[in-house]
Image (tube, rainbow, N blue to C red; front, top):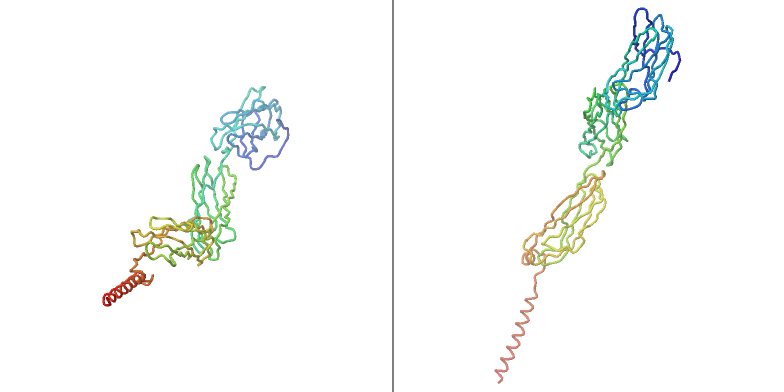
Length: 403
C-alpha cells in the first residue's frame, strides 16, 4: 500500500538518520506505529512508517524497500518495495505493509531493516529501526487465593494470600494489588488496603499477603471479594486484572451429644435411651443429623439415622433410641457409638463422633439402688406351698387321732 501524504513529525519519534556521501541527500525512516502495539509473537501486524528527506538535496529515483529477516515474515502477495521517485528536502511520505512475527521469536527489541536505493547513483544504504516484541499471552494471573483460617470468625483476625503468576518470558513491573470486600465486613488489619511489588521475574510467582480482621457484627456468610491488580509489561503498557472470589466469615458450631435419660438398667431388658444434642457454639449448625451404629452389645429397635435440622446457638434437641440388651452381654457398660453430622454457614461439613456409655447393673444392684423393685413372686409361691403343706399335715394329724 502506498500513501503519498505529507505529515508532521511526531514529537516522540526519535529520528534515525542515514547519511550518505557529502553529495547525497539524507533520508531517515521512522516506524510511527504498529497494530497491534507492541508486536505480538506469532501474530500478524500492520506496520506504519514514514520516510523523510532531512538533507539539502534529493535523489530523483529513490526506491525504498523493507528487508524481511530475523523474526519478521511478509506474505508473498504483500508489497515490500516502493518506487518513491523524488522526495524534496523536508518532505515526509507515509507507507504501510502487513507482516507476521514468527512464533519462535523472543520477546524484547528487534530491528526492522529498510533499504534506500538509487539506480542512477548506484547507491544502496540500509537503516535499522528498533521495534518492541512481546508474547501474545504476556499476562500476569491471579493463580491462587488462600485464606487462613479458612473460616474467619466474627471479630477474629486472619490473612488472605494472593499468588500472582507471571506466565510471560519477560518481567512485569509496578504491580499494585488491592482488595475490596463487599459490605465492609472484613477490613485490612494493616495500614493499607493495597500492596505494591516492584517487579515479578519472568515465569515466576509472587505471594502478596493481606492481614485482615472481621468485624464483630459480621454475620456468618460468604462475602464477595474483588481483587484488582495493575501492572506494566516490558513494553511499558499498563494492564489491569479484576477477579472476584469469596471470603467466608463465621465460626464452627460446637455441637455436643450426651445421654439425657434411660430406661435400660440391666442386661436382658428392652427400653429407651434419650440423647440430648446441644449446639454450644456461637453460630448456627445446619442440616444436623445423628447416626447410631449397631454393636454386639445391643440391638437397635429404632431408626439409625435421625434428622434434626438447623440448630441455632444454644439450641438443643432430644433423640429417643429404643434398644434391647441381650442377657448374655459380657460387659457391664453399654457403649453406643453415635455420629453427629452438620454444616456451618459456609457449607463446610463437620462430623462429631462420640460413644455414649451407660452402666448395666445386676438385678441385686438395681434393687439396692432402687432402680427396680424386688422380685417377690418367689416368696408368694413359697408361702403358698407352706400353707398348702400345713393344711395337708393338719388333716392327716386329725384323721390319725380320730381313728
